[in-house]
Length: 99
Image (cartoon, rainbow, N blue to C red; front, side):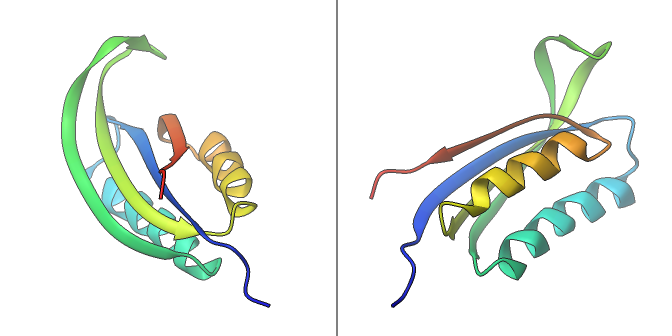
């Protein structure tokens, strides 16, 4: 029986202290992580540098990335855990999109 897959979107903010290569590497890392765990990346939208509403870890700007993906529900907890332990990720949010 095939597992149920839901549509999700995740927005994460990367530190602007990272250079372009490190930023691109992190975006690629999260895309690969989704596809490696039987998910599919539906779209990646890099919003670029934006001013934060308030300072986070003494940073006032962040590099915003939006990824739309489809995966099994259990994977989102693992993705959230990896966001939390990855250096360079300031904030992250994962939400399920309604069908």
